[in-house]
Length: 449
Image (cartoon, rainbow, N blue to C red):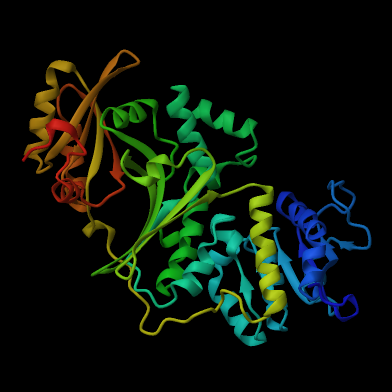
């Protein structure tokens, strides 16, 4: 039964930015007006800051004050909640924290500002007693922040990992299907609007590192700034890598992973070989997937679109509704975890499996494998492909410490008849354990017993 309209509470929104996501939010506010009223409140956009007030945005902004000053919106005494969808780590952060400090809840899709200035947001939220919602900053419409902050608040998680950048996932999927190199796939992604004018944040892994910083903060209670996350992009992944991976029943994905181990937290973003039997291997194009592991539930998986006007705007709106009804119910500071901050693990001590790709003359393949063994690198599987008139060898190694692997590369690269070595990590830390546990081979008949 609908509530009487005369008792409706009007919640006045200020908003910073009105691009794709902001425009999508304006549309959703109009679409769901009857739903809000049925729950006893109205959401009304009253003050907006944009760079160009004269620009046509394709949405109805009648009755909305429009300015060019984000701080004027953030400090407006006539707004009850601030939405920040402008991005960046300067004025957007200043404005967001100014609103919080005076008790105005904030909904933000700004992964850059949140990941790099987390301490300032937490301090401002505590000062003003207001909540922050940032579901849209981590993986668009996948409700992962809500799950980590509430549904799994007391779980001792061991791993958060996933494919969390739709642009790079589209590029890698296109490379595989079209049989093309990275540059051609990037042009196709740009033509379809999957990348920004400057795609560096996506293709160099920076966007994924910022999202991983936020996920790790909610999962483990420790803030690791993006510049402390081991980050590699996809710009060096070639068609020959794609083909060799497929020959060994794997696909290449940009994987972000935060793992709690005996030495502390390990946060990594890099291309990874994912076996066809793993869920992440089936995540294509602009879709995202996030996997959580913990002793209480073993494994949970979340799949959905990680970008786009309506998926992201919908995540923003859900946070707005939550904070409109409970102004202190945001994910920051959220459910606090007791204990000391977890240290960062030394990546040199990590033990992983690796994919090595090298150009090797066909008669010298056995020599190359022997050289690998001489460097202490044990091959579990290997394959060869002809590409651009040359023979390439791909090898999946047994588990080895990262420091030892890096030291071995120089010795391998100097082998006669080889053209240098390219390294990509595997998604799983130890495939041999999986093979033995499930009594089935991920590598075919070439795995040594």
